[in-house]
Image 1 (cartoon, helix red, strand yellow):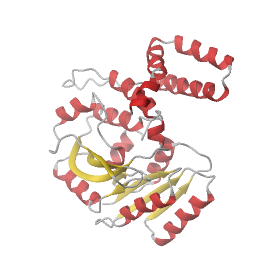
Image 2: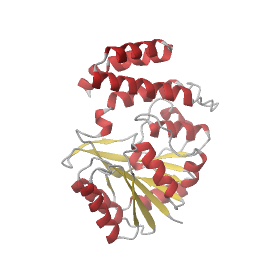
Image 3: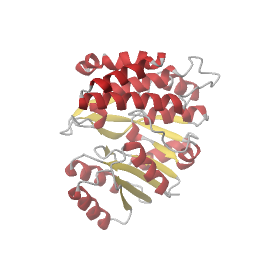
Length: 301
């Protein structure tokens, strides 16, 4: 039995990454590999730091991308490289409790699960507690209840995941969905009748940074999650889960891409192209309206 811890680094500070790495290396379980994907090939300082950490502990394996691939492709690269029976996800600016891997493995086996997501403490850039992200203080292993909650929203913290490797293999890892690859993965897992459980113990301190990808794209994440959840029928008992197909995913990603291009170039041609593309699909029109109203949401969040 072996655990593979998967992490991608990009623009996090070295001090914060060091805290994360130390929290993993100090785990009560010692039999694991720690795969860190360096997705910032332009930072020699970051690479040199990671190589020093790799030289200190043989469990650390550094994979450096030749170009910036983004989170999804970086995670998939780490997953394909991994050799463990279980996958533990961690974000580079989060801190894992010392007993995390041991407790999660025990919880997964005891409750006959394939996939565990745990409670988390939300902290700010200085490590101060903001709040505890919880779905109650009791474990949830009933699949009907799990489906009920997940078909309405993603309540899991991605960096708290502990999953059997075969689950990732059966689902062909993550799909390239902007800012909601974790929610898409969960919905596809439920479709395949993967047994998911919620562990109420706090296993991770999730750091919220002002310049984090999650925070910068909070509204896009919200819109994409809504798009995913709206494709799940309310009658959960029959397991009739209809997940977004690749065609719709590509349309949404293209919408974001055109929007980004227009914001950078302010070109009338790009604007017309964006409008025509939006009007070509009823769903895109609806979600484009949500995006245009995103400033209101961003002010609130």
